[in-house]
Length: 131
Image (cartoon, rainbow, N blue to C red; front, side, top):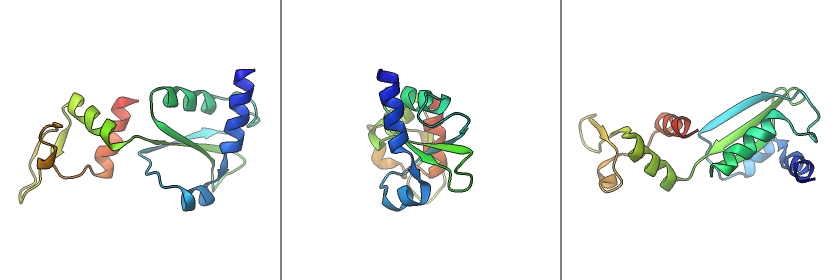
């Protein structure tokens, strides 16, 4: 069935975290940790969450935990920069303005050149609000 084939694909996507980290070019905004619980080839809560996040246009990579590989599954969630900026504008996210003072103003795409690049904290906050 479709669910079984997607679960099989999730199984194949599950690789050692150190290997994936060394070869991945993604910068993740969030990493969600799930108890492994069931067999990796069955439909599991983490597979369902990964599917929902992918449907919402997030990039999701699935890893076995490097620390507790028998017990934990990690979902690494990323979002492209254009979508992140669009969401920041919709949220009126108080981004840091470029310049000598640490001033903040609601982010706008039209004036994006006036803002510093988003920090990892800002990327995490914006992404969390989108999830």
